[in-house]
Image (cartoon, rainbow, N blue to C red; front, top):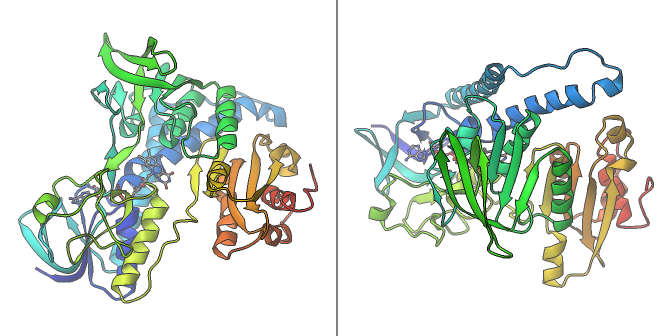
Length: 464
Ligand code: FAD
């Protein structure tokens, strides 16, 4: 068997990006992947297929609601469900094949099968044991069930996000358990395709951790699009009776019991680290209380020569966080100074409008007792947004009251997921709101709203 510098277990955004960077830095690298295709959760059953479905359903929404307003007449398209699923799958295939191409180009070996670690320095795949100076675990995560509830997932009627991306038909009614990113993205897909969607959330607000003002505006906009919300409600049971799902829940405010019926129930109550079959117990590897692999600042686990990155360790379960960790550990192993700035990791919800945030929320600033100022600007004051029926939403910039340094930014509006990056770059350079405000932004673009919010941190926005 070949002797590798690095063997990575898992080919998700953490693993595959790490492998490419390792190879670029001259390390002989292999990746173990048990799935039939490369790319992990993200490319196969996560970010990419969900974004394809969001795009297709948004196009339908535009045709049904906005084409007529622009003088574009004619019959609205109808949904060919199989055709939509084929489009989603072809998007996935193009991306997973792309990683295979990149592996070949960078001379990375794909060791096909499920891997385990019999001891440091060795990775077993099937009957073969491979030697490696360094082993990196990038085994990702899997859907978590509803905590403390009686729910048996069959991926047909009671589904996780994986089943929700492959339903046999568009349900008439859908209950989403969990008002987080994945539930709201997929819930809004089915709402646009005509399903009556009800979101049941344990907390009193959706998207926990989000800036409260943005979360409130977001819920209002989703309600306008037809989604219903039941917040402060704990689900205790979901069962299938006569082909329909029955969801039992109790309102936390008065403990009153209720039931909902639906064609499909999407369980979207978060994800948990996936470490099955790796043999970590036998290695006596240290884990966190939440079942993640415990690592130090350089991604080293408690077992010498073994590292871990991505969803399987602490931190936001996001593809770009996993990718950045993949690059950082590759650079560390190659003798460079790999580093991830966890203060500047954007978070995006890809609904319409999109929601994006980076840095601290207003609630966090208050909790820390920091003196800050707020610059807000509505997309209603942005010419491009108005022309494109995208005036809903706003930019909220938070800056230090004294130094004007940008501390956070929260956007709900068109292309928020792309707009947020100018603030990420600004924050990496320790910029002040005035730096953004004095940067010329092309007209007419949505990005002018970012500048206006920065201006609002100072002498005031122009168009509000
Ligand atoms: P994963 O992508 O989970 O990859 C791990 C891989 O390891 C898997 O392919 C698995 O088969 C393999 N593996 C595990 N154990 C073994 C073993 N023993 N041997 C061999 N192979 C093994 N994040 C975003 O940033 N943006 C989004 O828009 C977004 N949308 C999402 C939508 C959905 C529906 C879901 C479910 C997730 C979404 N995420 C999104 C989260 C994102 O997918 C994850 O954060 C990301 O995939 C984590 O990357 P990873 O490399 O840590 O692990």
